Length: 223
Image (cartoon, rainbow, N blue to C red; front, side, top):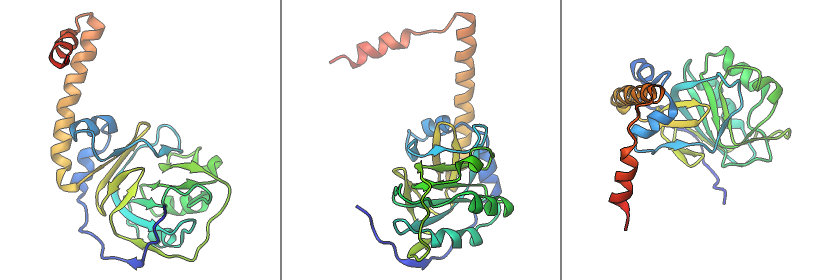
């Protein structure tokens, strides 16, 4: 069931600090998800850019009317370098919300990427560049440009709630949204987790991995 948005540009959130973004840059989405109790994550939207493309930046959020991308265009003009445009297109797959022209314009303005709960097109261009574009699907059909739509409000993409200014991280596994005031603590926990994983990998290589926890868990959890 679709919901008709308003026709508003709300007040922009406080600027997300570069330090908060840099704390998360390069960290695996799966590890960020793990230390956040596997919340605020989605795998429903897939990366359609080159497999090496990685996403990390504060969200500029947009909610669109079904099949219409007028407010997406306005968001392109409002976005600051490094921001990720996060688009709640209500999962609609019968009209593309972005393609080559919008991607080229975003790249020229230093925008960090697109996250679109809806369709895209011009995959020959998007799929051959490292500009991160996450979407639910692909269609050749274009959208309307009449509105309505809203900018700077909490949205839902792929079942994941994103507030304006949240830091979006994306890799081949999917996406995670981190509140900016939690970024440093999350990053510290991820670095600790990475050390544990590195020790496990080394133990596998040495043939010394301790797997007793599996039987212990079976005993503990057996009814």
